[in-house]
Image (tube, rainbow over all chains, first blue to last red; front, side):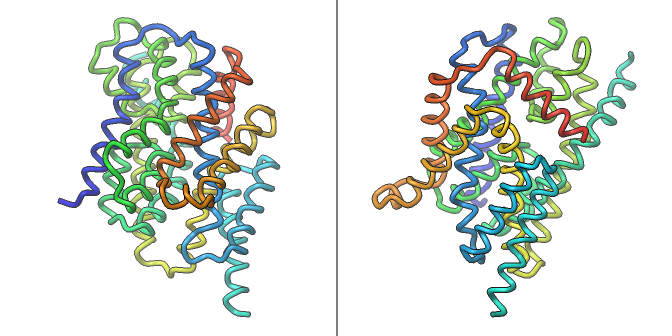
Length: 104
Length: 249
């Protein structure tokens, strides 16, 4: 059996425990402002750290294509375009630049 | 209302989540096949985990062959927010709700399902949750399969570009709240800068895995933000409301 399945099992266990413990054990709200604030900021810090600089270093894409995709995503999301539009335009913009680079 | 109609109501309300999930998990499937997972592995991961950021972050760690402890810590940090959601959900349930129902509802605690569950009027009925979970997780699994499958057959250039989709979605999730909230904006910018330093700095570059980098950046930046700019009690609920509007849009 591939070690990948062991990883998947560990991930699933940890993630499920996080979800199930409060539902089964806690009946009160988390009151601590510090913990509430920490948990509020975690998704933003995580997603930002996962996205940058990784978006500029994709396999098979030049730096220029990565930067174009990033710029498209930043501008459109700032204008509050929906998730799909932002993702599709980031891919499309990067594709155009990468094709141009490959042809020239 | 009886259980069947509660279940149906959940199915219906979950349709926008389902379509959104197909798109996000399609991007995940592409990335998974790009980083060496088989279609079956990607699909099993989606069935058992149901978490976009956690699943996506695991791909590099699997490829790098990190220790199981590091993988567990990575998932713990990235998915810690579900703990807050579950604590909020537990108060929407009738105190009489049994432990088996609670364990089943826990399986489907995601940002979007949480948003719909917690904002509904009155008590949360387990049957309603099961409706939401059924339709949403179906989309999640279908998208993963399609993405992983497409990843095996589409030309490499197209795959490379589609690989940006997941980053585009992450950006679309974090930028609008950052625009409205200066503290969130600071968190996003600081996390990006910190993450870049750890990626390119001479010693760190070779000694810190990508998963460990995410853990360190997340913990340090979130603690700093919680100390410097504590959140008012109802702000996390506002964030959930925004998610719900998004899901309905």
